[in-house]
Amino acid sequence: MRIILLGLLSTTGALAQSGKTSYKFDFGAGSVAPGYRQVLPSATYSTERGYGFDLGTTVTAVERKSKDALKGDYVTSSKPFYFSVDLPEGNYNVTVTLGDAKKATSTMIKAESRRLLLEKTDTKPGEFVTKTFTVNLKSRRINDTLTVGLKPRETTKLDWDDKLTLEFNGSNTCLNALEITPAPGAVTVFLAGNSTVVNQEEEPWASWGQMIPRFFKPGVAVANHAESGLSLGSFLSSRRLTKVLSVMKPGDYLFVEFGHNDQKEKGPNDGAYKSYTERLQLFVREAKQKGGIPVIVTSTARRNFDEATGKNVNSLGDYPDAARKVAQQEGVALIDLNAMTTTLYETLGVEESKKALVHYPANSYPGQDKPLADNTHFNTYGAYEIAKCVVEGIKANKLGLARFLETDVPAFDPAHPDAPTKWQWAESPRTTVVKPDGN
Image 1 (cartoon, rainbow, N blue to C red):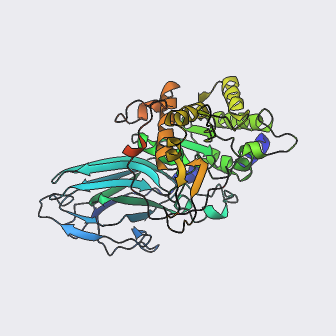
Image 2: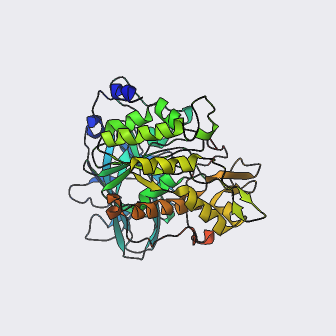
Image 3: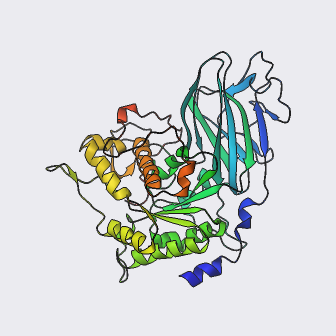
């Protein structure tokens, strides 16, 4: 396998940061701050303009009497709205200014395919907040001849297009300004995985990979290359590891979580201690060769209760154990999500644990004429709790990455999860009742 991979990596990762672009946008119809570009509500996204309000959403402009040109006006909407900017592949620092001189505001921000950047953030009248995030944009292109082999459902995902799209969502979002600058020196955390890791684009589905960006300070970008239904083998054959290695730089991280779909492969060399182990070792070896830092993550548990005992029964066979053994043999960090999610489900209990997964009665979402009862895939609450488990794994392993973790989140113990009733999430407009690939 190594010979094939090296042959495909003849082009360097320089493609990732080509065409660096910076923008400074001042939203509203009032005076424009020096050095900023005015953005009126009429600025609908087009490829000719290269930026604008996108996906059919609209805003209105509000102007306040103020000597501060940047904070004296803003755009707002009673519904979620999207703003897109054409940008080449790479990492970018994105800075937003939110607030209103006269009214209270409330905002949640997501990037691309519902990656959480900013949890619900409120401001009082006359209060403004400025927040910066480091965001990764990826391209399916590997070099002049190779591209990532996307599934049909991926070809329309915001994660794979040629622009950065931000979703502004909340009861009263007042967007004053937006700045975008390249961040080529940022640490990139690459995620390789399946439907439990991927950025799920539509409600009510979610995965821990799209929640984890919220927990990092500027300086770390999460590049989520996971996709529903993948195993280690299909991640390799669709050239996703090749893609990751083509843009990885020394000091970047590769988090690897597989198992759900690998256990369904029944070839003569398949199995937890055969092809699965060999491929995990390959991922570790290749990441190290690029100067990267591999982290092995055991598969999240399926909700699979023995109701008589209240215990969640392992349905992943030897795969979690095989992942643990590879981490030990290769001397790399291990985050045991299988153990932590088992504890999480058992603590919540047989019925309450359903609130962490996609269990909804009929008619909860458009076009849903039947109940949804999925014991593998998370909703946003469950995904957020599992992302907290990953954060604790980063701390426990004393990874250098830990210094970039936000300090506003208390330590988390899956034996003491957050109450589902306290979870707040502003739902994105797009929904689907179609289950992600894999189980």
